[in-house]
Length: 526
Ligand SMILES: Nc1ncnc2c1ncn2[C@@H]1O[C@H](COP(=O)(O)OP(=O)(O)OP(=O)(O)O)[C@@H](O)[C@H]1O
Ligand SMILES: Cc1cn([C@H]2C[C@H](O)[C@@H](COP(=O)(O)O)O2)c(=O)[nH]c1=O
Image 1 (cartoon, rainbow, N blue to C red):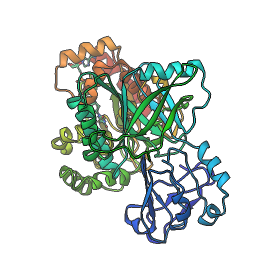
Image 2: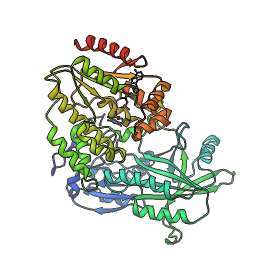
Image 3: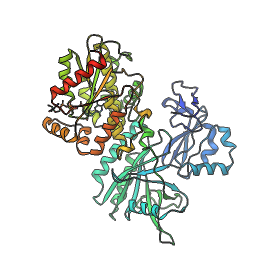
């Protein structure tokens, strides 16, 4: 969100497509309906739209960028942010035209993209920028790049074409294809590219380190470029007079089919300090966590042509939904916790003890679709779970006018699992306590009490083995990945309004029930 001057602009054509613009916050999407009103810059690493007034500036972008679409409605838009030479910000067509060349290029150099390469979950990632020159670098910096890149052939792939649904699916398909098709000597690691502090600027991809000398990798890369809307880059190693190695990036060219043209620009890899916050935070709102029904709804609408099940889910949402923000009936108590902490056992006993209605999220009516959405990339899977909460909210609204309601998982699970999946690395990389990421959606019914069941990792594992059911992707992750477990647990505890009350669920089922009944009596006056 724009934290600066809260300046908003609305396209005259479509009032719904309000976007945020200010000197600090730039615009990424105009609106789906408003393609008439913009220019698009197709750049080496992304697609950007530019206002019709900025023709002059567009020509000045990098050699790789071209302008394809023209019309004359929109006013201020961001110019090429993806040009590896840097970002140009335009606060008005006239202002840009009057900018002298010198200041444009100074602006450009100051605002480049950062790249974050995550070689191992526990290790510090390598963060670098691309620079036109070999600028001075410390021995430690040079060593960090050498360790990460080694002596293998290097390629990077960034998924930057198409809309967000297509990008999310292309990224997932690309990962599967890399796993299945790359030769064993070729390993790949997650690479993200982003503009520090600029929301929605994250582009995901991979860095490939190929120890083989076979040309099959190049053939595959050419195919991926065609079939997965990815930009592909190759890296070359140079040694300077002092014996120091430098890596240069340029657009990938398949030696077999694309003759050397001498046109491609080369950029040096230069290590830099990693940002304080994990870059996944830049894209988290409306990609991993949804704070309004309409935002999650919109994602499934965009999926209609590629995922027929989306239509069925949206129909259920339409049928079930009522405006429900405040719960004014009997108390609503949500039970949260990692898998196998005892939620189902406890919710069933609470149902009996309180003569309550028992609900869950995602609700039963979405059960036939859950497996399908669990196999989709995070953008789509998370939108599905978010919609599940709104359906559960409508059910809570109806039931709580009659009797107390117990809910097995709700918003805390949706947000905590999404945040923990999006943020790679250790728990310290999570958004800080108090971040807007942990806020409750303004249009989602709030429960009266949220209880977070906790047990030791050993006890949880024992209960999991004892239970022996099928597993979702998240459950498998929880079992094998200690870091993921810690992050889900911590994210649960950081969510606010309502925050959860932590309950030690390690005693016997009856002792846990008595403890929880006591809490409910105090907090909900039941
Ligand atoms: N207090 C307890 N002491 C010992 N075992 C328990 C206790 N509560 C539940 N269990 C056992 O642990 C296993 C997991 O419990 P349960 O299915 O209730 O967890 P859950 O949190 O609902 O899991 P999930 O979120 O994966 O559905 C079951 O076999 C259950 O019998
Ligand atoms: C509600 C919800 C669940 N999940 C994931 C988290 C767990 O691993 C499984 C467990 O679901 P169960 O029905 O309790 O067995 O689903 C999620 O990722 N997001 C959610 O909103």
